[in-house]
Length: 250
Image (cartoon, rainbow, N blue to C red):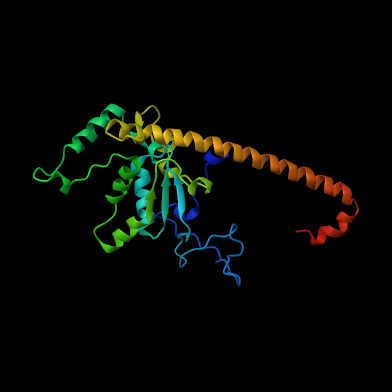
C-alpha cells in the first residue's frame, strides 16, 4: 500500500562518528511572491549543518524503542525537528509479561506525602516515547528544553502527516537490530495492559485511514496509466514533428 511505504532515512539523519556530514544542497530561491522554486527537488538546509529546515516525519512501526529514542534525541540536540507517528507499533525487547511486571514496578514509585508531585506515570505510547527521549536529553537546561520542544509524537498517523512521506531509521529497525527468535512486544499492547484506554480507538482510526489511502493510491495509479496512454497517442499523432520538438522538449 502506497500510504504505508517506507523511505530510507536521508543522509542528514545517518549518524556516524567516522565520516563528516555531507555538504548541504544549494538553497532554494524565492520568487517575487515569496514562493520557493523547485520545492520538491531541493531541501533547504540550516547554516550548512546538515540539518533540514523541514520537519522530518518518522514512521515508528517495528522500530526498537530505545534505539529510536537515542537517534531522535541526538538529532533534536542538533536542531532537527522530528515528528514520530505510529508510536503504538514500536517494539520493546522482551516478552509482554516481563515488560508489564517491570512497568508495574515503575507505577508503584511515587511521593508518599503527595503523589501528584511525581513521578508522573504516562500510559500512552507517544508519552512513553517522549519520556524516553527526555531521559536522553539535558531537559532542565535551556538547550535541552529547546531540543525537546522540537519533538512531536503521535499514536496512529493524524493529519496532516497522513499525506506526508514517512521515513524509517535502519539503525533502529527490529529486523536489523533484534536477534532472530528473541522475544519482543509492542508498545501499544504494553500501554493497553497498564491502563491506556484508546488502543481500540486508534486501531479503528488506522483501518479507516488505510482504506482511504488505498482508494487514493488506486486513483493515482489509474491516472498515471491514462497519462502514459495519452502521451503515446499524442506522439503517434505528431509523427515527424517529434524530430522538430526533440531539441526543445522539456
